[in-house]
Length: 389
Image 1 (cartoon, rainbow, N blue to C red):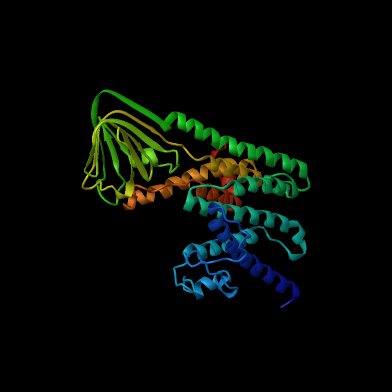
Image 2: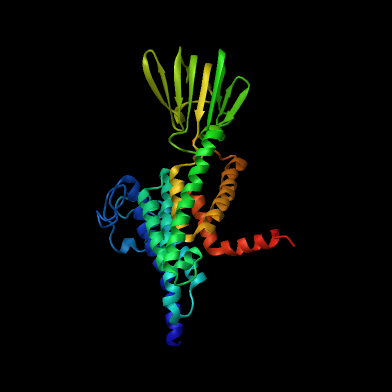
C-alpha cells in the first residue's frame, strides 16, 4: 500500500470515528443543556441514576455501550439506547459529509474547510433535534450560537451559501441575509397561522352539552360541544406550552366528581378547574375517559394553538446562516412534507396517544441535511421539469 493509499484510508477511518466521538459529546449536550448543567463541569460523564463517574474504557464511542449491554456497570440501571443512536447517527452523517465533499489528499486545504463547517452544522442539528424531541425546546445556545458559527463559516467558506470561492465578504452578506430570511419567514408563518387558525372562540346564549370522550385507549380523545367535534390534535397538535382550551360551565363532571359553576383551563398534560371553592388540578393521564367522560354544560369555549414554536424560527435562522437562502426555501418545503408523513403514520397504525407532541425542529434538521446531500440535484431536476419549453 502506498503512502497515498494509507493516508486516504486513514481519512475515511478518522471521519467516521471522529463523528462517533463528537456524538459522544453531543449526548452530554443533549442531557445537560436542558437541565442547566454545564457541559464542562463535571468534566467526566456520569450515570444519571447512581451518579457514578464513567471511566475512560466505559466511554469509548459505540463500543462501550455494546460492551456494557446498555447498563451501568455499578447500579445496572438501563442506559438509554439514545446514547448509542446519537453516536452512530453522528458518525454516519460525518462520514457521509466527508464522502460527498472530499477530494485528493493533496487538496485537503480546498475541500477540508467546507467539510469542517458542515460537520459543525451537523453536530448542531443532531443535538438540537434530540433536545427538541425530549424536551420540546430549542436552546438559544444552539440556535443563536449556531447562527454566529454559520456567519463565520460563510465568511471563511463562501461556497456554503452559493458564493464563488474567495468572495468572503459577499459570503458573509448572503449568510446574514439568509439568516434574516430564515427567522423572518417562519416567524411570519407562525403569527399568520395563529391569527388564521390558532384562536377560536364560541359563545352560547344558553348552556350547551360539552364532553371529552376517548373512543379507545390507543386513540386520542375527542372534544364535543353543540354540533362541533374537535380532535385532540386540533387543539394540542403543536405540542407547545401555550396551547390551551378554556371553557366556562354551569356544571361539570370530572372522574365522577361534580362541580357547579366553574371555569376550565385544559392544557396538553394538565387541567385546572376553578370555582368558588378554589382551584382543582388534575393530570390528564389519570382521568379515566373511557369510563367517566368529562361532561358538562358550557356557555363559552375558547382555544388557542401556536402554529409552531419560535425556537423553530431561530433554528431556520441558523440553517440559513450556514447554507444560504435557497436552502431556506428547500428546508421549509422538505420539513413540511416529512412532518406530514411522520405525523400521519401513528394515526394510520392506531398508535396515536392523546398526550403525543409533534416537535417541528427535527423535521427542519432533516430537511437541511437533505439539502446538503441532494438539495441542488433535486432543485435542478424540478426546474428542468417545470420550465416552459
